Structures are given as C-alpha cells and as structure tokens.
Image (cartoon, rainbow, N blue to C red; front, side):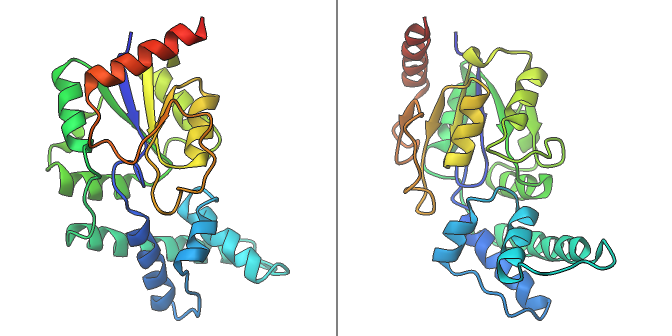
Length: 241
C-alpha cells in the first residue's frame, strides 16, 4: 500500500535550473572570474550532482593540470563561490523568480489530506530548500514534510542512492510503500537503486536523459491526482511479484 511520496527539489518541485545557472554566473562575476555558463554548457554540467562538485568539475576541465600547493586553496575558493551563488539564488527566489511546477502544490495538499506522508530527498543544500518552499508555501512549510534528507545529511550525491536509503530509514518504510518524484537521470538512478518506483517530470535541461527505468514520464504533475498515483503504484507492486 502506498504510504509516502518522496520528492526531489531542483527541477522536480520547481524548474530552478535557469535561476541556479544565473546565480553561478553572478558568483563568478562577483569573484572577478571570466567563467560563464551558457545553457548548453550548464546542461552538460548538470550531469555532475551538487553545486560545489559542479564548480570543481568545470575548473578541472579548464585547468586539468592545476595544483593546490597549500592543500586547501582550491576548496576554499570553491566554498566561497558556492556561498556567493547560494546568496544570489536565495535573493532571486525571494524576488519571485521561481515558482512550483504545475500540479505540485495541489498534489501535495491532496496527499496530506488523504493520509500520505510527504518527504524530500535531494542533494541540494538546506538553504536552497528553505528559500524555495518558504516562498512557495509559507513560513510553516516544514510542517508539511515528515522528513527531509539533503546535501548536509547525505554527502554522497545522486546517482548514489544514499539520500533515498537514509530517507527510508528515517521514515521506517520499505521502498515498496513509497513513490519517488525526480526530473533527471541521476535522480532516477538513485531512486531505482534504493528500490523506489519513480515518476519523472523532465525539464528542458533533462528532457534528453534516459528514463527507461521510470514508472511514468510526465510533462508535469498538472493532471495527476492521488487515486491515479495509487493505481500506478498498485500496478507496479503486482508486476514485482
């Protein structure tokens, strides 16, 4: 029986990647760097989960022979860039640059009303989650979620299943009692590796990904209701036996 819905954040709850990209570029500019991530480049970089990891990956692409003589200088710079980027992203969200994707809030409200648990399993930072959901839902947004696992509690980024495995431990539920919601191949791989049936709602940055392992691939959640989720979940359970 379906008992919980577990949501990724970036790209799934809201189409945030354009704003994230602009925030990265704002951080590079503030640091006086000549880096600029256009849409095509950022689409490629999204194959690397985690903002700090993405910065390091790009840096290593540009300077494959770079050496960190002091041992911490590169990581300190990455940390500072990421802090600047996070501040720029939070300001943009507070200014109304991001909204929840179609159907998300309605489906969450209906799920809660019908006794399902809601949870978040993401590799983004707690600050990013709070900025988005505080603006979209209100100051008491945290009360809607039974549990949240994020970059601070699950350091191994998707496609590693750590964040979902930890979420299942916190919820004290088997994966067969849950549905995951993702937008990317990395997210799908992480959820499936944890045993979770997964619904995908791609964005323009992820529409080219391989989603063959998904339970359903939908343009968004605008036409989805809880009875339909239960039906899909029940059919998936029967197929497993």
